[in-house]
Length: 395
Image 1: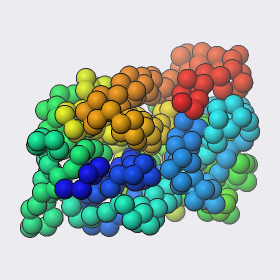
Image 2: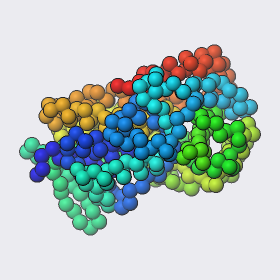
Image 3: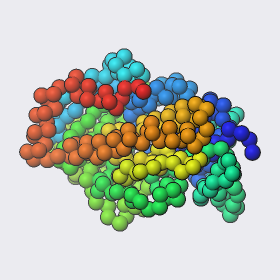
Image 4: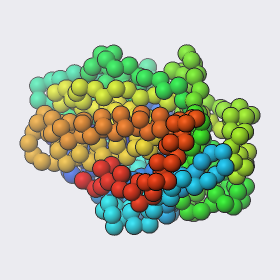
């Protein structure tokens, strides 16, 4: 067995970031992905400075810049009339937090990571390979792999379970403790051609609209050629929710009816969408441990969270940064994984719970929504900006 060998289950954003970081630190890395083709579905995402600084360290950030946007502000609006509740300035984000604040499509980020990983001789990507379990051995860890009808095993110095919110590795490590928690909300996504979108919504900024039991987020991407649109509504999908994936087709008529009393430009943006895909939103309660011997969890496998702070990908990237730092310290794998957990578990748990609370705030109605709107106006954009220092400041 080659020394300094890392095994990773999952070639999503977190798993690939960990692979790239470990390869740069001198590790040999094998990544096992159950999908036959490496492609990432999903919507746009925010790469706040706490994540972009790590992508820069891993050599990926420059690859993303042509497809990303540095928004000048976040404009918070009231759904019914489009009135601005606050404008959070972001032009000085890098000076304030130590790295740029970007928005990018998830697929563009994943593509950049895949291309970097394939170009790295220290990384071996195995697609169509599902990791079914792990077991400790004498001085290393062994994993079981299913590839079609074939079964095999691999051994390494460390094993990282980055296999998503329905993680098989997490279930082996912790049993069924802390089941996925349905939020009874669904997220709907689309990309609208800039020429079809209302001109008033093409500013180089993130738009955030707050309505009763719903909110809307949009921003331009890919050089301003498209507008990424995500609408989140309270919708109980019942027993179907657990079986829905990232790309369930959505009925535009349902969404337009749900937003029928919103301001005209918001409705026009929704109407311009060429089609919709939706997915149910889940999270879990924070879990007591992320590690077992030479195995550790990363990303959604450790801390699936709701998107209301836009930190799902960012926290997975933070995990990768902390993991690489810990494994590079020369203290031995098990001590390094304990240091990784110590660095990340409390912070990620705080973000999970704060994301839940933010969702409740966004979807208020009646007098509570009025009080929220008045509070946003009274606090103002610059003080709202300061409220993000704990989350965005580079560590």
